[in-house]
Amino acid sequence: MKTVKVAAAIIQKGNQVFATQRGYGDFKDGWEFPGGKIEPGETPEEALAREIKEELDTEITIRKLIYVVEYDYSQFHLTMYCYLCEVLSGRLVLKEHEAARWLTKDTLESVDWLPADIDLIGKLKELL
Ligand SMILES: Nc1nc2c([nH]c(=O)n2[C@H]2C[C@H](O)[C@@H](COP(=O)(O)OP(=O)(O)OP(=O)(O)O)O2)c(=O)[nH]1
Ligand SMILES: [Mg+2]
Image (cartoon, rainbow, N blue to C red; front, top):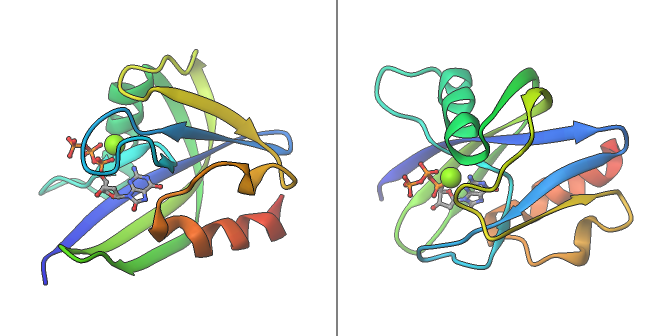
């Protein structure tokens, strides 16, 4: 099966993290952490900075890798590097997503996460 490598940003502000709702494609309306596919020649961190600029018009500070998701979708295997980040500059403008929410430990499960994110959400609950 094909492996898709993705970098995702868990943008943290105090005890909250920034979740976004997909605005198009196969997983439309599902909730995720912003980010996207790592292109050939890019490090995961480079891909992440580029994706967050494209998707949210925001510069981030990437703090650390906190989790690597490995998940089998029917069409591909997903490897997703998840980084704790902070906003450096910019206003988190939704260029591609249809909605966004700041979630706390207590509201983390109030949105409909993509299937691959479920284990990560459990881990985040411990962390927040
Ligand atoms: N960004 C992101 N993608 C996720 C998450 N969970 C999850 O299963 N995915 C899947 C959905 C997609 O199949 C893939 C990442 O794709 P993406 O659509 O964000 O990639 P991209 O920004 O490069 O967009 P595109 O140009 O391919 O449309 O990973 C998540 O939390 N964040
Ligand atoms: Mg994306």
